Length: 278
Image (tube, rainbow, N blue to C red; front, side, top):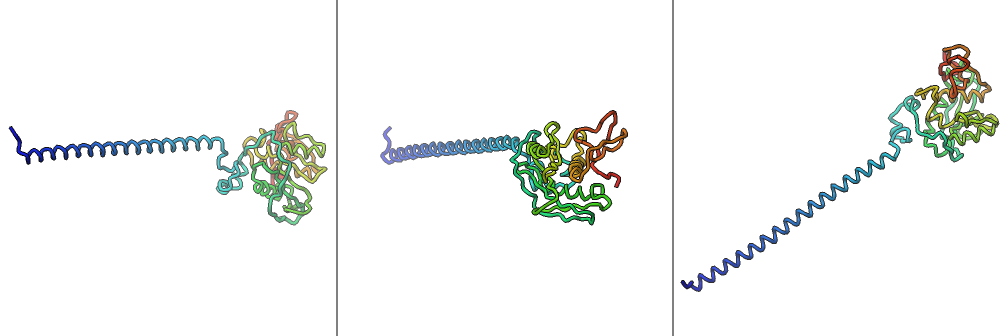
């Protein structure tokens, strides 16, 4: 049947409105869907970058030295006592050849006793990556210990930074140690040892031995370092090599303990001091 003109117009308008609404709904839905895809993509991308960054940092961290005393990190060193730092091993190659250039450790340490006074300077070869202040502290503490050459008030040792010293105790790479010891006709290369280069001002401490110790002392790094200082300075004071005479006795500090404790069927015990009973 025929539809009245007004009704027909209203129906057409309703259909048009519905069509527009449908189109708008489709557009909005598409935008919302598109927006979620972008957010998801960004989220995945950010997450992926974060994981990659962590993995990359971890990979680089394996190559970097850890922030420990051995890497020379001041913050880490401050958390350890002197004895703890002296008892640690440090990374340093047995065949390292350093720059041959030295820096004097800053500061002075006054002689604490009233015996015959010896002045010394502490030099550390550039580029070793070792704690020069710890080394200087060890020298002063060791030499002025009652068990050392300061025994019974006979001597006292004073560290200076500049000026003429009685000797210069020098921490140097194996290569540089060999060069300076050769100036006094000594060969330190065979056993990678230290020496008193008597023809020069330098008492040479091999940085490899300082860092890694020796089989004879094992993990007793603190005692080994004290022995190194006492032994080489002992040469500077005029003492020569000796050995223990009785099985089970302490090795004299002037025995070549880096090389051996046993000789001629006699087993000696490791010892860091000239006067160990004091």
